[in-house]
Amino acid sequence: MTAKILDGNALAQKLRADFKTRAEALAARGTRPGLAVILVGEDPASQVYVRNKVAACEKAGFHSEKIVYAPDVAPQVVLDRIAELNADPKIHGILVQLPLPKHFDSDAVLEAIAVEKDVDGFHAENVGALMQGQPRFIPCTPYGVMKFFEEAGVDLKGKEAVVIGRSNIVGKPMAMLLLHAGATVTVCHSQTQDLLFHTRRADVLVAAIGKPKFVTAAMVKPGAVVIDVGINRLPDGKLCGDVDFDGVKEVAAAITPVPGGVGPMTITMLLANTLEAAERAAQ
Image (cartoon, rainbow, N blue to C red; front, top):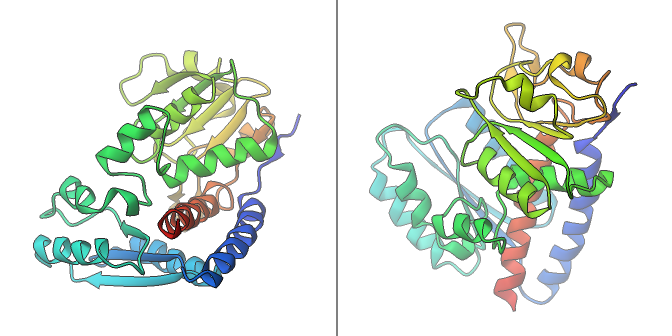
């Protein structure tokens, strides 16, 4: 058996075409969706992510602002700018690119963003709403994963789902979304004993741990749906995920590749959240 490849680029293009149509309709009524992205420091990966987010916005017909600060900027300067953006009617979404320099309190920065503009879904109030099953915004990467399930016709009700990773950005919200969809969810992490026991019984396996090719074919239940959230750079410069793609695709029923899987969907769902914020503001 060779797995069906879940193509993130194709799904992203399909969704973005719809978003552009919705954005044009909204602009015709006087509201152009607007996203502000704040980047502190010179982390190369963060610079690439921010550039891609801004480019995606512009291509979809959104207004975008990129705000860049030196790595030694005083946190209060950033907080003051967030306050200005909170009050700016042209801006419907505010995103602070993580990680921030060590002299920042990341939680305080995220909490400074108005909940109705928190398009990453990281504000404590939005996290609580997700926990209750009534999310204002769904964190972008897990949101994209759920779109894969929807597009592939994966019925999650009653399925055994295992998430490897417990981060606030992916692991925890992913577990909540799977739970709300009717799956029985196990969250595994670095202190989990007998990881193989858990992964081998998973109908749905989501890997989000940041370890290259960590999930092998021996860890996967035949016929499982495998979602690879990881993105790692190997010594030769090539990118790979947390899943050993070549081995696992011979066991799984469906799998996301790296690159070209979850990555394009993360930025796509950022556009979705920004558009939804603008539509709410227009109402």
